[in-house]
Amino acid sequence: MPSRPRRTRVRRATPAAVQEAAEVLRRGGLVAFPTETVYGLGARAFDAAAARRIYRAKGRPSDNPLIVHVDGTEMLARVVRRTTPLARRLMAAFWPGPLTLVLERSALVPDAVTGGRATVAVRCPAHAAARALIRALGEPIAAPSANLSGRPSPTTAAHVLRDLNGRVALILDGGPCRRGLESAIIDARGRRPVLLRPGTLTPAAIARAAGASIAAPGRRAPAAPGTRHRHYAPSCRVELVLPAQIRRGDVAGLSARATGLLHRTPWSGPDPAFRRRVAGGLDAYARALFAALRDAEKERVRVLFVETVADRGVGRAVMDRLRRAATR
Ligand code: TXA
Ligand code: MG
View 1: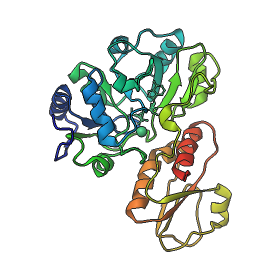
View 2 (view 1 turned 180 degrees about the horizontal axis):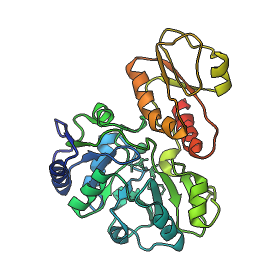
View 3 (view 1 turned 60 degrees about the vertical axis):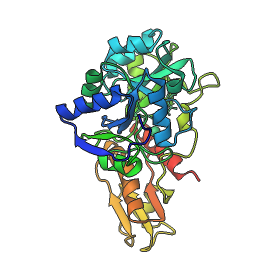
């Protein structure tokens, strides 16, 4: 199996395309597929060589482990050594859905997937095409987001193609992702949920379902390795601006040339080269964020100014991604 297929095919996620994708996976190849959060770049989770192809295709550091996707709790039993009362409560409340759980891994999961850790990250996606693909394969699928390492996660098949053309055999197109930001990651090995990465499921909703308050990652449960560095970044510089600045029409450096603005609050200042207003609630902003970063880049914007939101609820995940995109 060549590690770099020369041509990438994009197919609408029909039942026939899903069967073809499962066949590619069975042979150890890579398939990009839609989930409700972002598109994933999948390979057989129980095949170390296949999993290593994911790192090569993305240019991903090998110490940044992958998420294993299952179609339910039966398949989960092959991936983890044991579940915990906390994990069972969270799965009952949120699976299928945008919640990833970190648990002790089973012997079937290769080091290539977990970066040699004793734990594995598992999630059951809610997207019909993702679930059909896992079922057609009959095995769990390891999949990080289907972008080149460090870039914004893809929320359409076109985003995947732009980053991974020639690096993945097949992209299943399931339309734009409903959530638009990656899953929340919770370490569920203990009594309290440890939030390793915020997602569109709010910390309050997670705590309620857990029946316990959220713990911050401590020294013994470091944040998800992939969340440490500059990340989610387009080729343009990202600068954060406050809603009050937008309201006043006061954004220093914004001009007609090579700058852009992504915002929610009405703007009456001069029009930059690229401008996108996302009306509606925070869910809409979360859904539109990564696509807007990529669209600004396509317009050859050098500096993109992005309006911040309050750092709570869904806003916590939005600000987490924005701060990393803005890190230089
Ligand atoms: O919504 C999502 O989670 C999407 C879709 C495709 O499912 N996947 C995704 O994967 O966003 P990505 O690219 O973020 O990579 C997996 C993340 C990384 O931040 C990684 O460090 C973390 O999960 N992770 C994986 N295994 C882990 C483990 N055993 N302990 C802690 N963090 C882990
Ligand atoms: Mg990613």
